Length: 639
Image 1: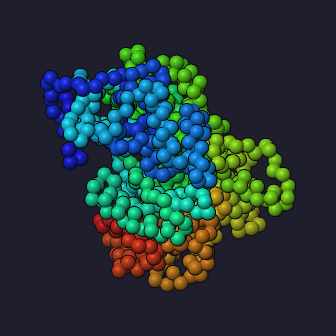
Image 2: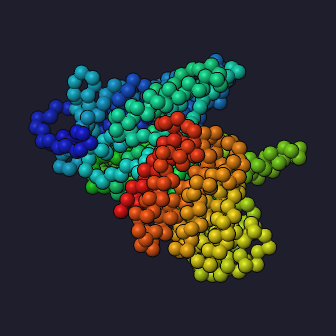
């Protein structure tokens, strides 16, 4: 038997003989968070003998200990809806949120009813392998080590604590600058007799580094004192809200390309529902396909129904171990979407069903009869959820409601609740013939993306070029140029250069938030298509006199793009996209990077550019994101 542990971040394996198992079960779930509780309960209701272990003293994860008592997307459907209904019976506060203590009581009752054995204050410290298969977990209860044997183990720790003890390939952090998503520390307060909760980005940290985690969490707790002015303070969340973390190589992998292009796997574990909720505002270093969607097409808040493959929770080449939660086989863009509380509940419930069938029949998780699994999951309502398939906007209906209200008219009932939550949406149909006219508006995103994914790209290029030349308005002409530039056609360069030369703070209006600036979009495309002759135009944006332009001081802090009074988003967008556009041109043309590095040093010396971007305190998102970008562009231009 092999004991695999994690020491100083490295996997260590030792051979053990005569190991004594203190407990045994068919399904062992490690982590009693959003996914883990429902995985354990679901496996038990499917007929398996289940043990659920939790490192802390409370169950429920972020939905209980993190104060995330409301929802952001995710589908309805499954056992959690019954718990929500019961948990909202609070009579002290007038709120639509489920009270965290009631929620924990309800989850405890659920586990007791299904017969799950719950072990709190038990930390996983090692995996036990036999013939290459995980057969159990070594735990520490504060006093002693004990071993639990299981037919199948579910890593529901959200950050893959068990996965980290294996040799499977792993990834940490985001592409580009390598940071993690801004974390959050949630606080709750009472205002006018109503329980309220705040959810703001608290900064960046590497939560796998003890020092970084401690320093930034303490700083975030200190900064939360600003909430006192809103109402009577109630509490700070026990758990720090880490949005993204480890991903691994699984038997299948879900990519954001699969999501954006509507790819459907053969065996679906469950359907998720969200936008690519990245958090943070530094989009200039993102991968090109993501930029095409988020920046150039301005589709940041478009939500999608996402089919998650069965193999995404199975680490490649490892038997007896699966995951449940946001740690799965995917890229960081996908992880930003497949992590919402509703979907984590439903994912746990689906993993629990399949894990129970695996244990009861003595077969591997991947060999479970999909028809049998689907029948059970469908009956419980946790696999399909309650949402139509496709892509949707949520802001369109909000604007429609306001318009109907102003006209004192009744809204048309054909707009139904497609999101399964608080957002009522209308479809985003990526059909070029139906959407081409949107290029004449300030919300051209659907048309631009439709051009991007068109099969006959050459025909689309000619159509755009003709429309661009015949356009009677600059809005139409510039939108056509952006779509043409997205298709890597250099005939878009003259209008793109014009946008940059006459740059302003015009932004598109496709979304309810995170709308992109047209000038920054043009700069991004110039980085892909531009020549050496375009360098002076970009250098001008980096000059000291640039910040004096009215465009950087026109918009109010709380305009539609972001609600952050600590940051000048117009300047930040222009500076970051310009730096990366210059880097891309230099790299493509083989120009000396030392020259560009010196320009960046001149721009960022003494923190002067950072001060133009933000007046936020050190450690807060606006400050840390700008500092991280500065370090990144200096690093990539060193040689």
